[in-house]
Image 1 (cartoon, rainbow, N blue to C red):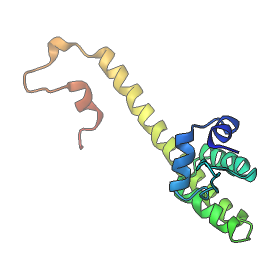
Image 2: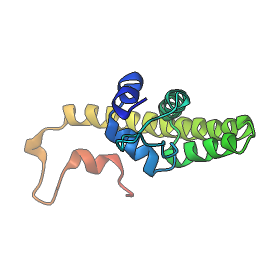
Image 3: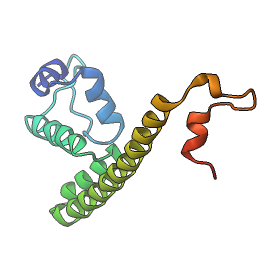
Image 4: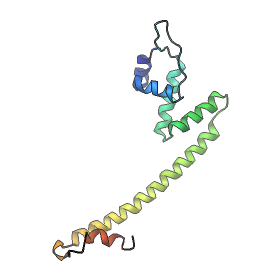
Length: 136
């Protein structure tokens, strides 16, 4: 299968396929006598896996590691489980941070709506933000 056909079948660009080759995610395919890339049929499933893994939040380096385990003849399930657990913990931590930021922004919005700019002094940069974190 030529690069254009594989790109169309997987919904990515030929440039992305060449990048995947350079990044070690796809093996360099054999070439036709005319020099065109001739991907084997299983390349489509591999690209689909790469896209699914990216959608799950795995980095290309992490995906390369998973593929190396599989290419070595071993199931990568334990490794993938550990990666997913770490990613889930990271996402939950970011969500907690965002919820805390949302609470601060809600309070600042209330403060802003109750602040009269006429009461600001020249020494105030912004009383609204100064009220946020006086010890910062």
